[in-house]
Length: 358
Ligand SMILES: [Fe+2]
Ligand SMILES: [Fe+2]
Image 1 (tube, rainbow, N blue to C red):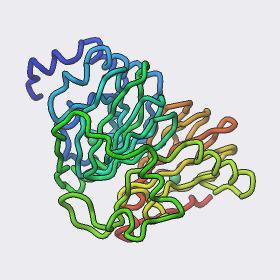
Image 2: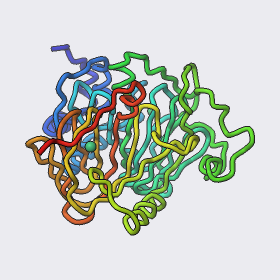
Image 3: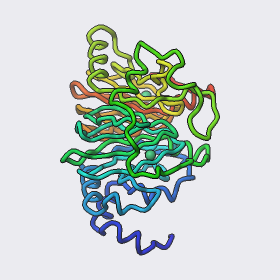
């Protein structure tokens, strides 16, 4: 076992370390040492919110963001199911920013988004010059190579889900997560609130908002995803209209994909696709070679994965590994955020999905 540096031990109390270990969570600044490892058999697993809450509270007590080492200046608890993340492709972390704190500006090659768990009007994530308010259940993109910092000017701790394609980038593809710090902790806010959303509505600039080139020192063919805030109020209205008028999908219930605002079509990122799901009834079982990670927006129920039943309630996080037969059994109305690496499989013509023969 690697010798632990004395300064590492100083960062968290033994009590906090015990709490995290009991709940299969680790702080980001320790997880990153193990990037580069792919696991053969990730399992179906769930992280209950009360355990996550206990863990992020303990970290928040011990570790101000300002004390974190350069390169890790995000206070994040990371569900561990593979070597260093919840899956071999999608990384999920639960990040907190206390009142008055800033998570300093940086940018990187990995795509990221925030899904707000406990937000506030004065909790802002600043992306590409615009300060986006983080209200409950808003989804805000931080596309590759766009500057982003998180600033809490409210009087309550804010918490959200970070979702990145880090394990895919660092482990499977073994690319470097090209990374850079901004010279300032807070990037200048150069755009009015609502700018990015306004440029991807029905009216488009003739030159288009982006020139279609990949941002940063990269090359590729995919339409870059712009900075964008998907307000939950709009998503839930769309889901309810769907539920009032249409039939549910047999496997996903009432389900809407977040589109790349530039193309108007999913996936949101070339590597990850996201769905908001509204469930009322038990779904039919199916299986596929893509991984699915779920966050429980609200409601209670169970997701059956093989012989396991993952019993969930609000703000739990769980993972359905590839090729496992699964279906959802909500207890009344439930809403889920689904995250999948399906676009990676589709881009190489390897996506497969089937229903089990009875
Ligand atoms: Fe980041
Ligand atoms: Fe599925």
